[in-house]
Image (cartoon, rainbow, N blue to C red):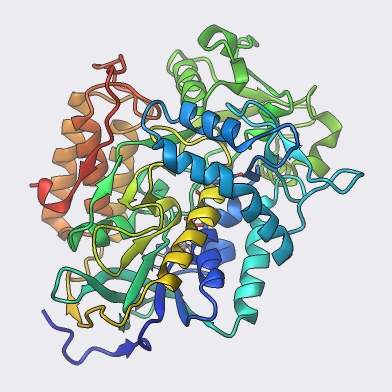
Amino acid sequence: MTLGSLETKRLPAGSVLVVGAGLAGLYLALKLAPRQVYVLTSRRSSVGSASAWAQGGIAAALSPDDTAEVHAKDTIAAGDGLVDHHIAHILASEGPDRVRDLANLGVPFDRNDKGELYLSLEAAHSMPRVARVKGDTAGAEIIKVMVKRAQEADHIEGLIGWRAESLLTDGHGGVAGALARNDEGALLGIEADITVMATGGVGGLFAVTTNPRTARGDALGMAAVVGAKMRDMEFVQFHPTAIDIGRDPAPLATEALRGDGAVLTNAKGVRFMPRYHEQGELAPRDDVARAIFAEIEAGRQPYLDCRKAVGSHFPEEFPTVFESCMSAGIDPRTQLIPIAPAVHYHMGGIATDSYGQSNLDGLLAVGECSAVGVHGANRLASNSLLEATVFGGRAADYINGRDWSEKKAGMIRSQPWLSMGPEVSQSLRNAMTANCGVRRNAAKLNKLLAHIDTLIEQVGRANPLIASKMIAASALAREESRGGHFRDDFTKMKDEAVSSYITYDMLD
Ligand SMILES: Cc1cc2nc3c(=O)[nH]c(=O)nc-3n(C[C@H](O)[C@H](O)[C@H](O)COP(=O)(O)OP(=O)(O)OC[C@H]3O[C@@H](n4cnc5c(N)ncnc54)[C@H](O)[C@@H]3O)c2cc1C
């Protein structure tokens, strides 16, 4: 189907369409200077991006006692056999300079009396490595600076309030821009030589999540339809300590609290983590999430106890968590914080090389919607803001270094607009959490796939349904337990670690 009389915008030759304005999209856009960039986003960065919600900070080997080798080793260990070692070394070795670049751009990182970066310890890091900003407000502060710099930049133009819904193709197997819709329902076709997806995660596909609700895998659906390959889609990270006060999305109690000594107890007042893992509260995220889930299933409400470790310092050190607790009538200085696991991060996504290039010419992906192989089966805490800058920066280098004059232009609409409506959306979210959550098995996953098919019959192959189906089908195909993916019916990890790949034509 051609675009016919639809309103269209042909971007100047060689300019870039970036879909998404979180850290990955904005950092890439800044680094593309002086090349012209158009950043399209459905919501303003401060409200619609997970980047702005990050609490703990950004991990990098910045301490004199630390090295890129140790950071890469921790990253590889967390990823449970599926991290690409070469990619982990790129992340760890290029990371410190990217964090220094953020500081030069104006991010006010916390520093000690000597002016050195204050680095905190988070789970599964072998030493303090997480640079923080104004306590637990790293994401908001970083995004504030990125937005300001983007607004000042002559080469960046914002297309705010437009939700990309499908990709345009060039008729030669490549991608040639996107089709977007605004809140009033107007459609806009944007023809571009280079399209970069930077739309974030998939938490909004699940009922219990810490992600913005708009994080529902749109890019994965759109890219899959035009032939992009997806990698490791089954690997979803559940944050162990979402604050369980009935909110959607669930507010987060950052891992840094446990880094500072907060402990996990249950309704019986028992500190339970030592029973599940030798690293106790600082065990890898998926182990902690499963332990908390097991306590909930056993009817023992879990809590985070910060009274001794943080106590009266709470308001200055963790203002975001403090505010979330107080708004629910819980004073974390003197009371326990009720917690539950929630979908937090997607390790899988559009398969890319180390420069963000997908298998389709003209289509790149950066940040959480991409899968470059750096997180494997489980992401190491605070590695994702780093990934957004390291691989966002590399994608900019690649784009700037290539001659795009040969890129085929064209404009073929790939997919009709399909709206799910709130009922179908909630039905999907409930089914995903019930059947593709912390513990999975074949019966649950088959039930989920059948349910998704019923929803597809009702509304067609909307992007969130395609993304969910690829996650569920990949989870069913992986008959082992590894990282964030735990199967009741295949509890052991296979000897051989193999990444999974799925394409749209495999869904039927
Ligand atoms: C509560 C919370 C705390 C976290 N804490 C940390 C931390 O301390 N350290 C760390 O490293 N990581 C943390 N993470 C993870 C990290 O924030 C994200 O993985 C990372 O910021 C993702 O960046 P991104 O740019 O890829 O996506 P995002 O920041 O989510 O940005 C996505 C952008 O795409 C836009 N968008 C989405 N769909 C469309 C569409 N169809 N059309 C147009 N625009 C679209 C959104 O509006 C948004 O602008 C945290 C995540 C959460 C939710």
